[in-house]
Length: 210
Image 1 (spheres, helix red, strand yellow):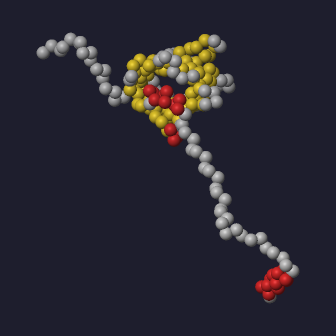
Image 2 (tube, rainbow, N blue to C red):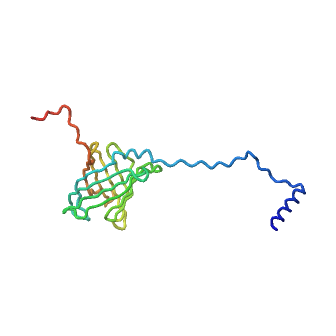
Image 3 (cartoon, rainbow, N blue to C red):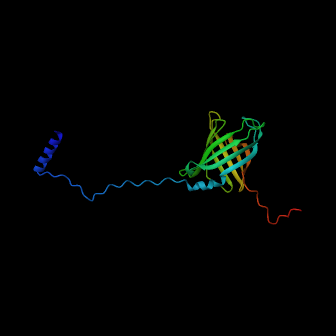
């Protein structure tokens, strides 16, 4: 019945001289919009390549309200992660008699094109967390400055300074500003790249005795 009504309607339309839009034989489908190019890591990240690798560190933590002064030892790992956009940073102190509650730190370093600065975010095993920024290497120094939270109701300015001492050695100093305008050293350590070849001897060095 339904098909009969449709057929009758079409016949009447044709009899009345009505026409229907023709479909062009050469009509082409609408092209899909071009896919946006995938984002790429910032070229500035190459400045942090020196830091990548495994490091063995030793140094001294100063006396603070968190505990007495003591020797420190630990290992750090820094590697590209998250699609090459961030450096994953991991540091773990070694537990010793002098240091029964070793600190563990995890975080990421990247580059913020809006600030035109390197950025760092970290958390640690004391419940603290920090947000810092750096303009990048200035000669042999890389300095991250920002705020540390989780040490009480207030933010505390925090500064990490890395200084190159050679291709496979650096020093690291961590400071807090408990009093405005004054930085207090919390820990200083020397780190050596794990697995690095020993420095080559000078060609004019005295020959070894038989």
